[in-house]
Image (cartoon, rainbow, N blue to C red):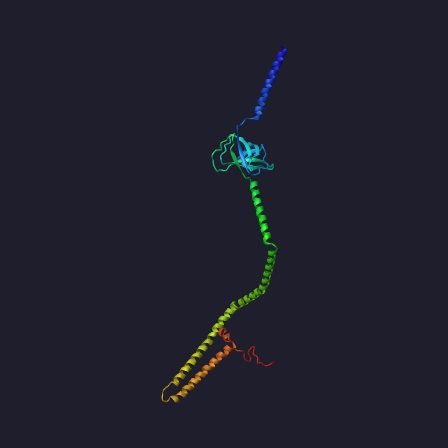
Length: 308
C-alpha cells in the first residue's frame, strides 16, 4: 500500500514538472505569429547577405531571410526567400534594397515603397510573389566608378594615339616656329610702342596748341597768295583792254597803259616771288605758318657767319 502511495506521488510530480516545462517553453517562445513568404529577385551580387539576416520594412524589423539560392530557370538571377510578419501589408510597388549595418558591416534587406502603384501584393506561401531588388548605394558607386575608369582608360588611349612620335615631332616644330615668330615680333612691338609714344607727344596739349596757332598764322600767307593772284588777273584784264582799244590814238594811249600794266605786273611778280621763296625754304609753313625771322645784330642768337 505504501509503495502505491509513493508511485502516485511520483506520477503527480512528473505531470507537474511536464506542465511547468510546457509553460516555460510557451512563455520563452512568446506569441507565435503568422508568417508570409516572398521571394526577392536580383541579377546583382548579394555579397555579405546570409540566411537568417534581418528584413526591415521602412526601418522596422519585420522578418528574416530564410533561403538564398540561384534561380534554376535562369542562372543570372538570385532568389532570396524572405519570411515576414503577416501583419505587414506590401504593395506591388514594394522594392528591396541591400543595406549594411553600421560598423559591423552585416548585410540586411530593406523593404520600401517605390510609389509606382498602391495595389496590394497578396501573399501566397505555395507560390510566393516576387519583389525586385534595386541597386544599393555601393552598387551605384561601383558602376559609376567602373564607367569613370573606362572613360579614363579610353582617354589615356586617345591621348597616347594623339601624342605619338610623329605628332610630337610636329608639335615640337610648331612650338619652335611660334618661338621664332614671337622673337621676330618683339622688335616690331618695340617700334610700335616707340611710334605710339611719339604720336602721343605730337598729340599732347602743347603741340595741339602750336598746330592751332600755326594754322592761324597761315591765314595771312594764304591771303597774300589770293591777293597776288587777283592782281595778276587785273593786270591781265588791263592788258587785254589796252590791246583791244580801237581808238584813233590807240598807239599813243597804249604806251601809258602798258607802262601801268607792267608796273602792276612787276609788283605782282615780286609778291609771288616772296611767297614762293617762303614756300621753297619752308614748305611746312603752309600748315605751321611762316618761320620766324633770323635774329639781327644785337639780338640774342645773332651770328655773322664768320669763324670765331
